[in-house]
Image (cartoon, rainbow, N blue to C red; front, side):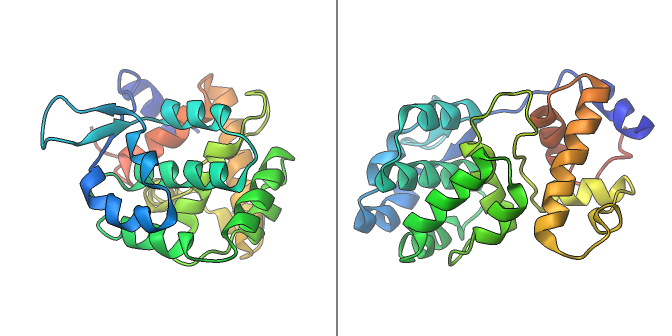
Length: 222
């Protein structure tokens, strides 16, 4: 906890920035599924290649609050989450997103996992999320995006490879703390632990999650 506290103080002025994405790269993958309109999310970039846009975590929250329960609405939010999660650095993102959109299980998976997240059963949500092309790094982004519960709840957090790398570098093991190799349980344990730490450090859990992502395992850098 002491090492984590020092990191929170050291990077107190750092802020999570919007993610740049390139609509031209995604359009052909999304058009066959009627989801190309999601490429209008966010704001246009004023620098860099013409047509690029910026999408933030707040944009995802606004889209979540605007959309309803219709399967197409959930699909649109999922696509937006992938745009935000992939940016311009993950060249496989459009292809993997298209694979998920082509999976007949998608409507049920998005609906049931959102319900589980809203009920606070993150372990069940983890077990339920099975779509082609989507691994833990991205479906936990979906969990975080759809969790609209009160901030006082232990809301879902992202657990991708960068966050996991930082946790390991700090000497924290989800396997040891959870006492099992069962990943749904380990994910729920991670979320609970992060919220406990965040409360002790007087920072939002999402802030702590982003800091670990930002550090990407470089917890001893000055």
